[in-house]
Amino acid sequence: MDPLNPAFDVANVSYRYNQTPALSGLSIQVARGERVALLGANGSGKSTLLRLLGALSFPSEGQISFFGDPLTEESLQNETRFFDFRRRVGIIFQNPDIQLFNPSVFDEVAFGPLQLQWPKTDIRDRVEQALQEMGIAHLRDRAPHRLSGGEKKRVALASVLILDPEVLLLDEPSAALDPNSQSQIVDLLSNWRNGAKTVITATHDLDTLEEIADRCYVFQAGRIAAEGTPLSILHDAALLERTGLLRVHPHTHKDDARHPHPHLHRLSE
Image (tube, rainbow, N blue to C red; front, side, top):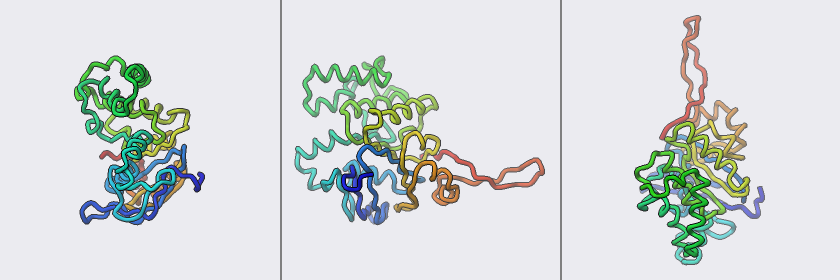
């Protein structure tokens, strides 16, 4: 990681919901082109940080920089800076219904390019390409709210990826999907633009960790409990148990004795 040119530099950031602390003195860096997973149980602060990185909220204390420029509410008052940031940073929410509001899938995917005033002929061609890449071309005239969870997630991804952002922020991208849809989404993200983009994923799904991330931050109560490679994190059972990512259950064996063993469990929101 190049510390002189990080995509994001989070310096001593705190955030509160009303008076309840969600992040406390958090400092991390994410390099250009790096794939980072933010791991943690519900309420650990990972999704809050994702919102701050996406400039949907702003820190109560501390500072976040995006490629060296301060990311503040005041800086995004500048229209040019606002549209530049929104073009460069794409966000996929855990619940795709939050970001799907157009009457058809085609209109949904075309919405961003229209806001950026792309030529209409280019928009039509790019939308068709994005629908094909996501395997949802047959849904172009369907209403998004009538689609399955996996189909909605693909539409949400297409509506963001069509803009070819430099950075992709994902909140639980495989949540509530069937195994086949999960596998397809993971394959897409792990190979997106041949790994040339910065991808930050908030998740508590350990099953796909090695496929989607090069480095992990483990969150606990709004602070960083650990940092490491996916392999090192997955092999630290004590850390995973302490941070609510692994559960220990007693099991009865043939000798009728009950023995506690650690088991990885995918935690649902």
